[in-house]
Image 1 (cartoon, rainbow, N blue to C red):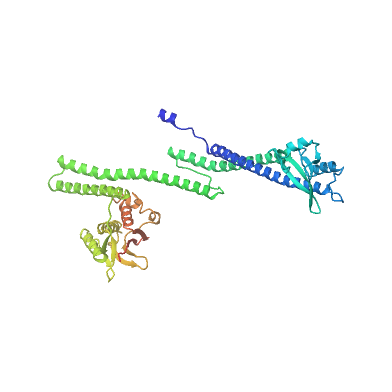
Image 2: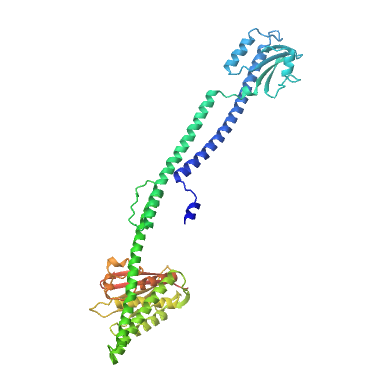
Length: 471
């Protein structure tokens, strides 16, 4: 046991588990999104600034032509460039070069020598020689003739530059989204963890034998409400089952002990010579009856356990219902006393074929008839009615067994099919385990049918066995 405890993994709460993992996932996701967005913003900024640089180059080219159609460098060109740099938010790393038709440098800002210009530009003087710079070129034209060109160089670093204020704003926004996402999953996990913790505590109480569980069922969430309600109902049914199990064990022990005690006492009396001759034979007959009753109770218990475990085979034969029921009732009447009147049979004139097991159907019908005899009213003879009819449009046949006995009280009618249940009025008069109706219903369901209590009153009961038709 100690080794199992040592080897068991460390458990974390659902609150910690989900919040930490969700925080990592959302942080990585937002960071990747931020990097992608940041890269896209840089590319867009470089594209837009290159367009602005091209417009500046074209404006300088247009201002560098005089009225005579020749190149003329204005004295205010430097001020114009500085003004445009401030207006378009261009950086100080920008370089403006003006050349004539013979590629001779006419103007540069900042001032450059011819060699420095050749070093900055490629041999065609239309692009930067360095990969770290980009060039915008505009031709100086007059009357369709090219007089020269304006080259504006910008470093790629400056083109991709994003102001620090925007970076700070973007970082704050990213941090806010991470915190908001974490807070959302934290509150959600906390909301889900509370009912799970309550259910876990309730389950621990049940494991210690305490079934009086009361959970908060006022949750707004439908799933949590259903969880609490279902768990509380389960606890109630477990408590009921535990009580039923205790009563069942006590009842079974008592019912099995009674015939054993009787048999032991009767045989002991014969052996010790307390009774002799005819009285001794009578005692042995009573002992045999008690042994038979004990054998039936044990058989009922074994059949019930076997059927609930699904190890009892049930056939699905084509059966002619009228002769089958007639034979079952006839054989049963032969075993009954004169105080039981001949059962009345109401059978259809046309053949009616069922799909089922004849032995199991006989077990159900005989059990219902025996129960009716046991429920005999003291002031009248037992009168039974067995009726067979077809349910129109349902593909089922009904076998109705009606008696004129004492009936079943309303308090007990809902429990008559429960295992080991017997009404309080029968517990002192009848000897049995209370498995007859339970076993009969299981047999009916195994043949794709059903067994229900349709009517119950002080004038008697009506049980209905429904079985599928075989067309």
